Length: 151
Image 1: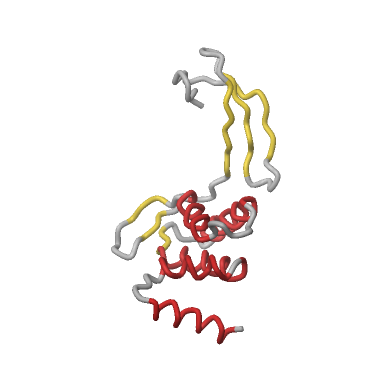
Image 2: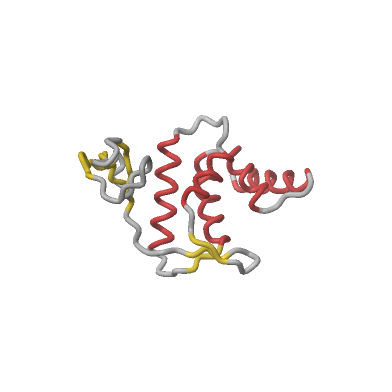
């Protein structure tokens, strides 16, 4: 692992332990060149995922983008960050176990919508407004009306 401070290529692991959810390994590292200490997190990646956008453009799956999208939808809502982390881990695992290397954005968006619908209705509507590209107030009204019909 390269030192983020001096760029030295050979750092030493001083301590390793799993995180609370056992999905990541936390490692404390030491750089013998500059003496700096830093922490890294390692996560198991079952397969390399490629996201296929609506335009046909392809990009590497970025779990941080999923995390940011959920955090924007959940902004100022009473949901713990650890819970969001667990949901994103769950979504990533489900995607990796689908057996496909190329995943349409629609699949990812629907997984996020499924989790948000049971987690927080306000965040669900916020995410849907962007994901389903609402243009007018009537789009919100129709969507919220469909929520009322489901309950």
